[in-house]
Length: 49
Image 1 (tube, rainbow, N blue to C red):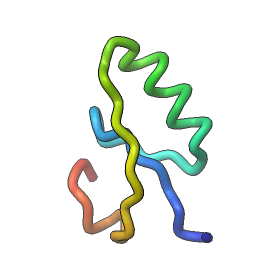
Image 2: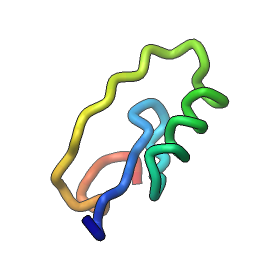
Image 3: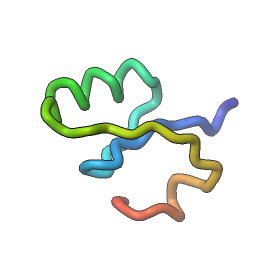
């Protein structure tokens, strides 16, 4: 999937790989309860831009 991206639902930052997002949440939001889901919309049409 060429358009796949990963977004932190806590701060809105986008990442190209799941591992980058996982590292981000562990470092920046260590105490937050993170929930994962798939989003089919284009990144530009979602909030946190």
